[in-house]
Amino acid sequence: MIMKVKHHKVTSFVLLVVTFTLLFSFSQSYVIERDAKSDLSKLATRIALDLEMLPIAEPLFNYSGDQQKVSLYIQEINRVLSAHNSRIVLDDIRSVEPSPKPDHNHVYILESAHKKVVIKYLVNKQHLWISYIAPLIFAYLVWLLYLRSHLKARQNLVKSVTNIESERAKLVLDLNTKCIYLSSDPQQHVQLANKPLCFYIALVEFCDSNADTILNPNKDVPEALVSIANRYFERLTVLGHTVRKKPNFSNSLEKTLSEIRAALDDVFNEHPELKSKYYPPKAYGEGSRSKLHSYGLSNISFSDVDVKGK
Image (tube, rainbow, N blue to C red; front, side, top):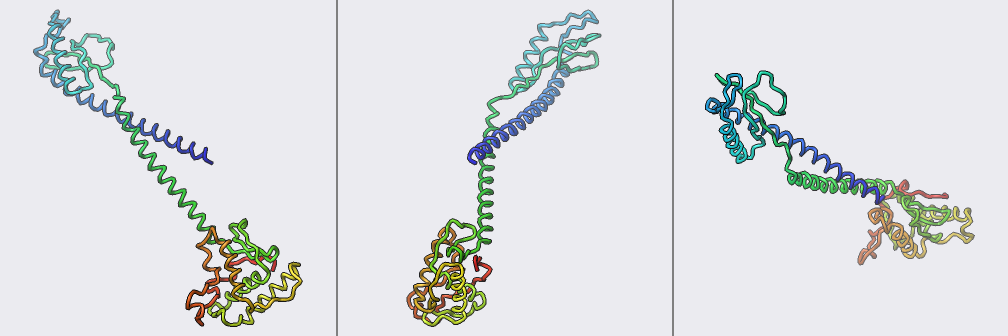
């Protein structure tokens, strides 16, 4: 799993670097071509203005011209172009030959009233490699944002799955093993004695139908609740867990409830958010003597538990 995560991180970073580098390279090439065309247009305009004064050789008219003066003119033009960081370099200016040979990649035909010349030029298409630090930095920043959003998405997914599992989780009350545990976490099981196990199952079943009944620990346990508890105790006898007579479920009620609460504390140790529905309320301070205190489970439904072996 760790190797997959590392591979995913490396792959995503490489893809981002390649993508941004290619995009940057294409944009650089486009800018170079655009600037070269603009500079060529300006160069042609400048030469057109000076053309009549340039002593360019014209073999058709047996005019040798002044190549030295033309070379000095080309040098001056290139000095100006360099000062403006132009990608264009003027290579030569000469008359158009009757059958010109394509010996130059970049040529521009310039015509005036009395002359027709070829402007030969070079284009520097070299990229400034130090500028490629920019796409690398941008790719790294985007990668960090991607990792952050990816991690957050994974955390939300895990949280969502956990919440779904928690919502679907039921408290299993197993008469076969006399254990209680969450259906989502069967390894965290706790064994209960016969009396508290039967009483708790009966309490859940009773409260499902009598949610508004106040079960005060200072009063006798309702007969209906005792009857249900006796039924589950008889089931334990059938399953071979006990041969003793039925216990008095009204006796030592606080002890029985304490054993139930202790077992639930262990079961819900990793899922405290689920405990309140299943937990018989405790009485604190003056509330312990209040006639309104109830150990009943007011928000539970019998469908919230899974009684095995009944």
